[in-house]
Amino acid sequence: MPAHPDAPPVDVPTAWSWRLAPALVVCLAAPAFFVVRVPWLGWSLLAVGLALAWLLERRDAGPRPDPAPRRAPTATAGRSGAAGIRAPSLVRDLSLIAAGLLVVSAISLRAELDNLAMARFALALGGAVAVPYVLSRWVYRDRAIRFPWRGGGRWTTFQWVWLVAVLVLGWLILPFYFITSGVYLNWPVVDTPELIARLFVGVGAVGIWDELFFICTCFALLRRHFAFWQANVLQAVVFVSFLWELGYQAWGPLLTIPFALLQGFIFMKTRSLTYVVTVHLLFDAIVFLVLVHAHNPGLLDGFFLV
Image (tube, rainbow, N blue to C red; front, top):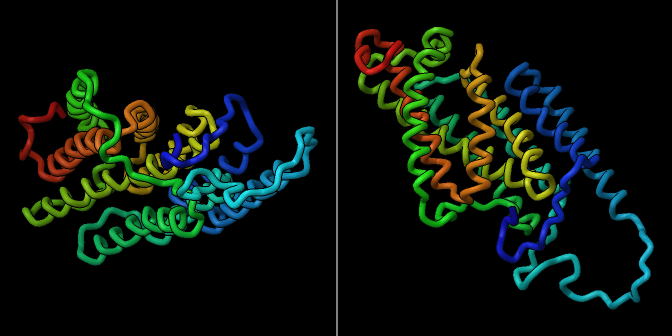
């Protein structure tokens, strides 16, 4: 998935590669930060992953036999196109993921709805998207991250049908999960119009951020170096770990793992950020209604089956 029309083509491996090792180590920092919640372990994994990537790139950049006649270097050597966009680098791309993880891990992801907590979330989550983007565009100058809101063309019939299916599946599964497992208690009680409105804004904002960071940042960066399924599994590790601390615990990974993998697959097929965000927001709309229902028995009893 090239990040920019002028970007050089990426030779994506179709088999196992040692380059997967540093990517996996960096992505495993996410469960260290968000599941077991041991910050020093997360920092260590990020450092080890980046060091491994640097060593592998140095090895790959070593002298090789060159039977072809040497040509004088040009002003655009090592770059591509008039825009001067640099070729993909595993070290740079993993460092962007690491930067985002460090920003998010700086705060507790416990769901709270007071002004200070919402401001803290806005700054940390916004920074986790903005910092890698700024580094990529103006420091590394490789434009590895972009947000294709208008990508993918017109939605197909199947895409419209899938939106309806998301609503139906969410309506059937989410009430059972949240209420029978008790994980709805990981979210604050919302029993006033103001708190319900804050919950609506918070759930929707985090849902949009999920796609900006996990799909358009983590997945897109990993896809520049690895086969689709490898990049998708790696981004799902990060995605699901974040959702765990956010509150999707108990047997929640049985839902969040398929959801994360599907979002990566849908983005790969549609190339449309608008579409994956729409899918996520529809799913989160059901999450919002279930949380209101769980904290206010009797309010939506006729709407859900549980």
